Length: 120
Length: 108
Image 1 (cartoon, rainbow over the protein chains, first blue to last red):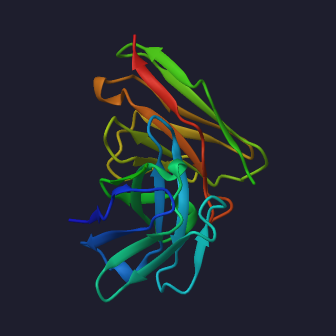
Image 2: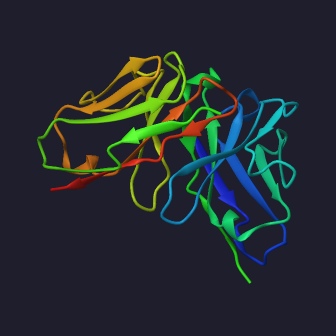
């Protein structure tokens, strides 16, 4: 079964750091680009960051540039999101998502999400 | 940046109704438009990609159309399990993506 399982969320103070992980199973992880998408409480979906299958190419939303770093370890089938200088507005459920082989064709597998709360 | 605007923001309908949700892009995106369904407390689910192609396993009562800047998601006969929030997503600027603000479909 194709599955994504996020972990690493929690409560952190403004200015703090957190690293999210996403463990993948049931597919050839290194063959697919991956993304992080977040959803603030009661709000819509916001794409945060993406990474190519090899890990060589990364992209960020403006809200994440300079503060977040996406990476992957294909030997461990795991995706990461290092989040630094966290702000209250980063509070959200963070989902990892597998992109289709043709990246224009959407994200076909999603994790259950991990909750990040930034508060003093 | 490409902005995606959905309408309506919310919609009340009854089981058996035909429902249409609209998504408009701020500039042309060809057919690089995807639709997702999200139920409360759950992850989004891909319904339609490339504007009109049904994702595997999605019931045929769902359909999508459009190209350029204007797109629609239609549910031909609402079922109880279809009450959810629906999001469009442009993938024209892959690997940078933008979602619409969502349309909440509620039971009348």
